[in-house]
Image 1: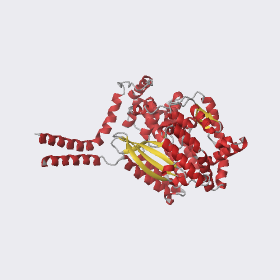
Image 2 (image 1 turned 30 degrees about the vertical axis):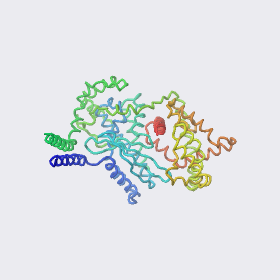
Image 3 (image 1 turned 180 degrees about the horizontal axis):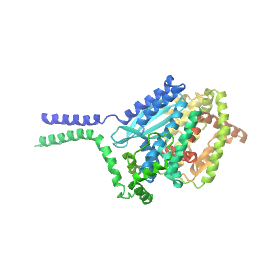
Image 4 (image 1 turned 90 degrees about the horizontal axis):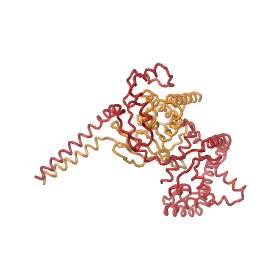
Length: 206
Length: 313
């Protein structure tokens, strides 16, 4: 009997060790970067002049490691991914990431009014996929923001954001799908590049 | 005898679990590198109804000649705005861009139930443009003026008042969906806010979790009973809707006490309600436009996804 219990205990230890060395869960992997972004937004040091740009760069580097932009690009093209050549896919992913960054980082920095992010539950959809629910509290409203995350061995990274039930990836998928019915992949990439150039101009005008 | 077998099993379990944890990091890149090899003999998955055969042919060509393709692209000298990192040597593209694996689509096909047709697209686009101008030329400037003149306490009071008035709509919709508890909560909230909140301008019920309101309407009730969306329609002034949701809105109007007032008063009050609502959302529409490549499609998709979420909850 004693020997059996010894082996049972060893077995338990083994399983615990395995789950612990699997490292952070998705909620924890999300919490750090998001809190860091919020603290940059709240930091008065980054509110004026050139420091705004520095703040933006900081946020962008945090976001870059948290979000898997290539996966987002792939999922926003869906079937059309196969129509793109590898070089086009690379170009598309890069310009899409830049476009998303310009659009949303600008907005977040300008419109931040002391919103608070409250972390909810994480839900494991399978061993590599999870969804983490958060709520953004503005003064009168609460906005549910869900993050879908993937872990293929390199840690948990976000591949979709769902705001009040609207999935970012699906929204772009509809738009890109419509465009690609009439235009070629190169046309879509060019259109995105034009948008990014416009955003740059607007940024320089202000 | 039994104890030896147990020991062996446990030992194996320990070794396997510890081993799995350590090798998990190594297997991922190996898998993505082997994916391109699977591209050509890929089995046609039954769940995919689209003609993937049309897509597979050009992609097979594209995948078979990646280095030649990338040569062309680099020579064509397509200027990539703001991209300094994309100078890629011949044929040296990261594995992730060679990966044709679209497994995630199989998981998602079950979710995509709401394919809504848009045969009225030309009309809808016209209305979309009209609403766009209406917003920028009228609603936004008036709302901004409204915000600067009216204190936020008053604006939230007005918002609470109108929320209170639309209790019958939420109650009926909840009942029709079998959400009896929610219907009760709406009624209790109405009583509480009308008395303690002074005719609904205040909302002391917000402090009580069992008195929360839930955004429900007739369109959602219809959807919950399996009524499909019908066509996508954009109404002037009222904005995006679908056939089903329009029927719902008309039905809801019967439960809105404001509809029973003389036309002038009714329109004035509804106008004030819309103005007040807009005052909280200035900037949201601009964000949607800036964040989209095709604003009309973006709005349509966002509206449909949003409604689908509300029907399902």
